[in-house]
Amino acid sequence: MSRMTSTTTLVTGSVDSVAANLKAEEAAAQNPKPRRLTQYIAAVSATLGAFALGNVIGWSSPASGRLQGDTSEVDFDVSASEFAWVGSLLTIGAAASTFPAGILVERVGRKQTMFWTALPFIFGWALILFASGVEMLYAGRLITGFCGGVFSVACNLYVGEIAEKEIRGALGTLFQLMVVVGIEFVFVLGAFISLTALNAVCLSVPVIFGFLFFWMPETPQFHLKMKRREEAHRALQWFRGGADCEFELREMQQNSESQRSVPVTRMLDTLAARRALMVSIGLMACQQLSGINAVVFYTEDLFKAAGSSLESRYSVIVVGAVQLVATVAALLVIDRLGRRLLMSASQAAMAACTLFLGVYLYFREVDELSVSGLGWLPILLICIYFVAFSLGAGPIPWLMLGELFPAEIKGSASALSACINWLIAFLVTRFYGDLVSWLNGSSTFWIFTILLLAGLAFVHFFVPETRGKSLDDIQDILASKNSAHNNLTQFSPNSIALSKKEQHHTVDMQQRF
Image (tube, rainbow, N blue to C red; front, side):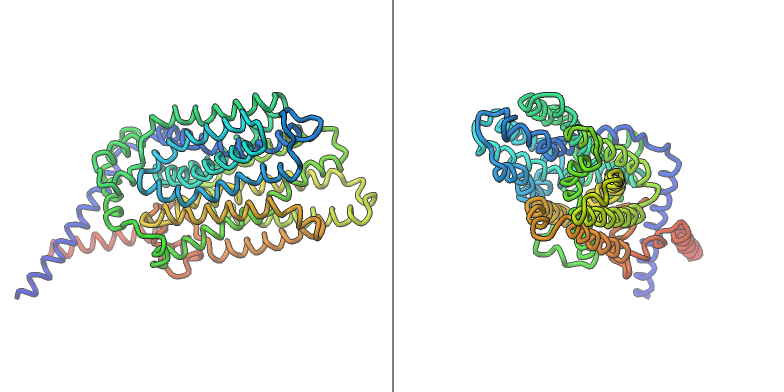
C-alpha cells in the first residue's frame, strides 16, 4: 500500500509539473510578441567592439605605404621585415587574450569584460598615435590585438545570450558585419587623410563604445549564474521590451541550476561538449584555411594585371564594399536559409574560385601573354570569393560560437576555439609569402581548394543546424547520435505536437485516478 501511495505521489507530482508547464506555455502564447528594438540596440552597442577590431585588422593596408620608403609619414625607419611583424602581431595578441577573456566572462560577466577592455584598447591606439619608434608600434599592435581578441570571445557570448532564437542568427551575424564595416571604414578614411589623423579616429572608437555600452544590461544568464534572480528578471524584461518574460526566465533558471562551471580539464566530460568543441574548432579552421588572406594578398596585384586604372588604395575599397554588401545580405537570410546551407554553399563557391584563380595564375606564370585578354576574370573570381566568404565562412563560425556550448563550459570552450582561430590566422598571415616563394601562387591556391573541399565535407558530416532552435534544443541535438543529420527533424512541429499530446494524455490519466 505504501509503495502504491508513493508511486501515486510521484505521478501526481510529475503530472502537476507538466500541467503547470502547459499552463505557463499557454499564458506565454497569449502574451503579445515582445518588442525587439532593445535587443538590436544592445547588440549594435556590443558589436562596436567588433567595429574597433575591424579598425585594427584594416589599419595595416593604408599604413603600409606611409610607414616605409619615401612616402613615410613617421620620423623613424620601418623595414619590410619589421612591418611584417607590425601586421601580424595583432593575431598573436588576439590569441593570447582568449583564455583570460574566457575566465573574465565567467567571473565578472560578459558586459564588464567588454566594458573595461575599452581602457587598454585606448592605450594601445595611443601608443600607435604617438609612436617614436617601431617598438611602440609593436606594443600598440599587440595590445589592440589583445583587446580585439577579448571582444571576439565576449561579444559573441553576450549577443547569443540576449537574443531570442528567432533573431539570434541575424544578431549573431552583426559581429562579422561590424568587423567588415570597421575594415572598410579604415580603408576609406585611409585613402583621404593622414596616418596621424587615421590613428586618432581609431582611438576614438573604443571611447564611443565605452560611453554607449555603459548603459546596456548584463545578460540574464550571467545574473542567474551568480544567483541574482531579480537582476536577471529586470535585464530580460528590458531585452524583451517590457513584455512578460516570467516563463522564459523560469526556463533559463532551470537550465542554470542544472549546470555549473567546470574546469578546462573537464570540458570533454560529456558527448554534447565534445561535439560542440569539435564543431566550433572545425568551423574556425574552415574560416582561416579558406585562403582569405591569400586572396587579400593577391587582390592588388590582380587588379593591376587586369589593367585597372584604379590606385591600390581604391581597389581595396572596392573589394571591401563588395564584402560589406554580402555580409549585410547574410544578416538578412541567415535565419531563413540556415547555417549549414550557407556554410556549405560558401565553402563550395570559394573552392571553385580558388581552383580557377590557381588555373589563371598557372598560365600567367608559364606565359603572361597567354592570359593578357583575361584580366577581368580574376577580378570577377575575387568578387565572387568575397561574396561567398561573407555569406558563410566569415560570420557563421563566430555566430555558432555563442550557440554551441553548454553554459558550464561556455567561457573556457569559446576561448579555446577563438585562440585556435587567431593562431591559424597568424600562421597563414606570417608564412603565406614563404609558401608562395617555396611553391608558387597557383599551387598555393590549389592547396586552399583542397582545404576548402575538406571543410565542405566537415560541414556536411559534423555541423548541426541551429536555426530557430533554443540553446537547450541545440544541446539535445549535440547529445544525440548522428547529430548533424538528425537535427533537421528532431525538433519539428510534429514532434512538438506529439510531445504535447503525451502531456495531455498524462493529465487525463491523473483525472481518472
